[in-house]
Image (cartoon, rainbow, N blue to C red; front, side, top):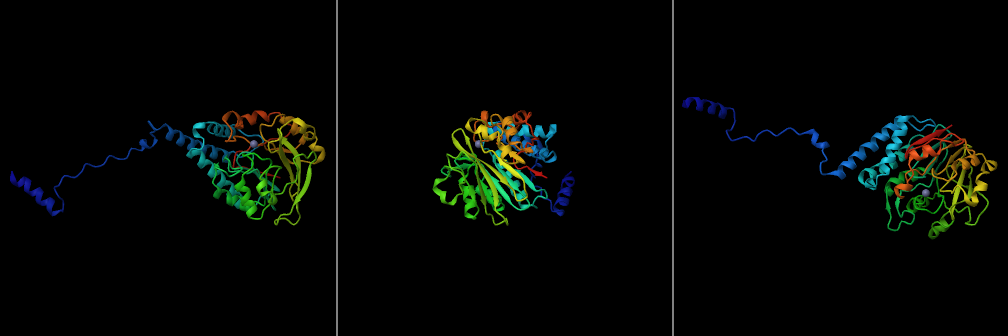
Length: 358
Ligand SMILES: [Zn+2]
């Protein structure tokens, strides 16, 4: 019997195998555990939001802005509405990553080739737009979003300032419609000013840096102000008209910018669709031709105002202003309903998208 034990032992020693007890092999990793969020509801919501944000982006990329959007595109916009109206996600990591991605995408668009079309309208957060033409790039109401960016005092922005730099570097001027936090961002304005680029501002905004601003219109103005901006990119100064609008009693400039390529774009700011301004709003078409109108989506009497402006195309903005409570964030699905009877073609855009206009 002894030789039966000794021989395998000798063989084992000859092969360099020790007889010490070896640990049992590890269980193979369970891939299902990565999808298990039991007792971690916040983590589950963040991961779910991250995936739906990403999926919506993919669907929107496959179904770009159109005056006749299909069901896929509309569902992607409505999915964003759902995420952006869930306060549990406000300023969480999924939302913050989505906003950083927005800034990077817009910077990448601006860093790419200039449009072959005479006008590209790039949608930024809230009611921010960037007009890019073969010769010039103009920003209107671009902000980082979040708390107190208008003053910078105890601010808590959604987008980091570093992510705005490559955007501002590609823009030639900034237009600000009115002195509200979701339209006016002091650090963004300073990035323009420090680079020697003009910032056009409404009455009452940033009195502390007033000498550095272009103010085309007085608070009590009742007539439009025509002015020009000399920009290094342009051989001839840019022609702009500031209409003397209001949001309630707050002066709100509606800028009608005529590009060197010959198109005129009107941005509404947060113009109230009524009050004392309504009579002249209804006659804008008599004053000048508007090719593209960028109204805020929740403007009262929007169909009537669009009739007064008579643009060739309407691109609404201001959906999902995250500084508002959810009852006034204004969803894309609400815009779909509001623009049903507008007397002009309408293209809805998500943040970071652009439309080339022939
Ligand atoms: Zn606003």
